[in-house]
Amino acid sequence: MDLKDRYALSDVINAAGTFTPVGVSRSAPSIAAAAAEALGRHFIIDELQEAANAALQSWSGAEAGAVTHCAASGITVAIAAAMAGDAPEAVAALPCTDGLDSRVVLPAGHAVNYGQPITQAVRLAGATPVLAGDDAGCTLEALTEALCTPGTACLLLVSSRLVRGASVDLAAAVAAAHGAGVPAIIDGAAQDMRIAELVGTGADAVIISAQKYLASPTAGLVVGKAKLIKAVRAQEKGIGRGMKASKEALCGVLAALEERARFDIAAWSREQTEKVNWLKGRLEGLPGVRAEAVMDPAGLPMPRLQLALAPEEAGMDAAALRDRLKAGSPSVWVIDRMAAEGLLLLELEQLGKAELKLLSEIISGLVTQG
Ligand SMILES: *Cc1c(COP(=O)(O)O)cnc(C)c1O
Image (cartoon, rainbow, N blue to C red; front, side):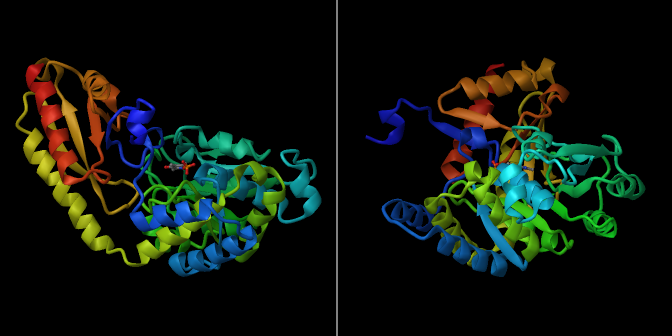
């Protein structure tokens, strides 16, 4: 009996992207096999972290890399590292930050919520988030002023579709942090395809979710300057203890990075465009539905399909369609962040051909029944 039947679980069609509440991604057999083999063995964890360090260096071009439990914990641990370095007393004392610089500056529009507010991931380390600018944007001057305020530990930036306001030039912001004498950390959790660009900003740490497009077991990849990565590893004897990478995650990450070395991003990108165009063709004739391909605003080379619903003609608004999709069997999940504005976003990356066809039939059925 498979897991679904054994535990009476729902069938899911995931059009919400690499979304945590529906299991994020599906690993290739080589990655699953590496994780399964790891579960049956002992390893010296430091050797696995060292192998990951070497693999992360060659994948990202950064000086060093380390693996944490997930990207959220990678953020907390990187902030802890920026504050405490690798001094054992400071590592053991966190989240008490007495005697340490503990202000963490973020552009206000980068205070995103990816399932938890990122400001909470900052506060978990004992740090105090300080927002610069407002939701409309943050000028380099405003950022520099906040960074130059005494007591500042680091700059935190986010590269994600969740970011609000005018876009912040990441490399310029990193340079502003370095000008103020503090390190810069970038949360690029879902932007693994852009790793070289993010590392190229000069950031001291870039954080990636390994279970998103790399499709490894859950893990956070922290790559960057050797000094900060050493301090990240030092947190394993501090607040990072509850945020550690497991042996199966480390082996899965190594296998996922090997898969990525064979991966053709341009071909993947074309395939995503074809899927979106195919579904657009199927859905745009439906009453009250406008379908439009929109590129990832952060720069991931992937479109999503945006559906705009006119409730009078479609017979339901975006929130109602979302609810009916979720309540069905299979349960269909979409991105509903803009449902109040009448918009649903469909990410098709996780879907195979048969699922895509089923998704098209389910949405068409619901909208034509009204
Ligand atoms: C997904 C995501 C996270 C959290 O990643 P986990 O690995 O699930 O902890 C953090 N930041 C952003 C921008 C994300 O998209």
